[in-house]
Length: 570
Image 1 (cartoon, helix red, strand yellow):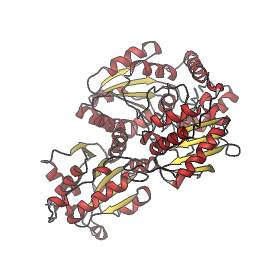
Image 2 (spheres, helix red, strand yellow):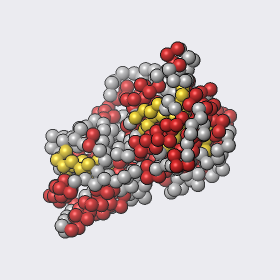
Image 3 (cartoon, one colour):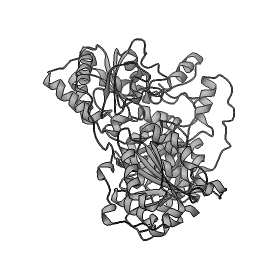
Image 4 (cartoon, helix red, strand yellow):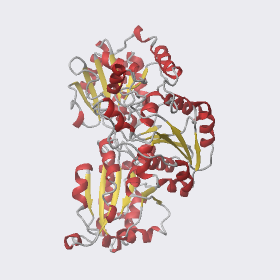
């Protein structure tokens, strides 16, 4: 069997359904057998960066490793999605084809040392030098990607290996289905550490549980609810962990931190005497630059699947190394066996106060005379978007309001963001990855015009595949986040942030999307409903103000807004 066919057989054996990517001369030896191999679907993308984001989002949507491929000329273009997967602990197996091994030393066109570039941002990079090694090496790639702390694995295949014959038997072509999903295996933290954590939680006066995306990957929703209810502890999530705990629950405080936290939710963490981090790496976004909570007076417990980030930024009183769901299940068993419970009458009015403060922000109305009030957009989204619809968000003004104020009533992965690194250009391609994973759902992608310019060509991919995606553009003709940081933190006039107005509707229609625009809040709901009802992809433009003119819920920006008298939402 030739190497190209071997790769396909191994992907099938490993349970891979779809691969995102685009062709190049060095990949044609793989594509030739692919034409008659229907078991693994190939999704053609417009560039390699998009393919990487599609695979990352597909992995989040399915719980299976995402897979994408790139030819040698564009072998480095996929780095944005790879580094996001690496920092976000998302299992991705990606292939780069290459010139024959060592031909780059003779300056063969498109040849370069790909592996050295990807070594710092992958769990492992593998170079296949002979076709006979493909079965063993691909099994290894999926084991590494899904086990322990998940992450990306790079497989580099020189083009001549695709054409090389290898003697293989049916017994060679087996997959390892236990490594076809993640978490591949669930470890439990040390029992003694679990007992100490329970003691601390039971004695704390103002404990808070904060869930990161590790809790979401682990599907620890039920276990979190049981622990929170048993010990009467309020629960918040980071922006990337949104969905780990149902935001309709009476103990939910919502998203916390600098990327989606509100005055209400952040207050709980600021006043806590003990924070229990579950599946969180305590990054700068989730802790407002490591100021929330204050490390000088707040104790922490940290549960993570590997120990690398435990105690990295906050000294952990108790270290719990294990899978979130498995460890929390054991914690609940021990809590019940020891009859540990606590009541907290002070939390009886939490849900009412949370809902009242949130309603007040919605009813406040637009303090500015221009643009559509983002809170009106969030309200329309909650009223019109179907409950099962995934929401994919780009960094920027579009994400900050939805993360903070769109209430996700049911636990589970509904929100998709790339806030582990936070590069622009995510929502458009990532929504394609989600739509391929969940074809029965209407996917809502929300981005700004800054992000739109990175990969709007993927709208052709949406149209070509007939995907049910509604792309909502928050339009303010600027790199608004940088403009906000420039004005509100660095205190100088915007520089290198402004765009000329663009006819976005014409562009969307040119790519084959049905296009709409909302001009005021009164018609917004009706126009949104119409865009969502389109069969296939649709586009909706909404004008909004830049972040320095209407300040979104970013704590350090809001502080400046209060001092300078600027309008804000927090």
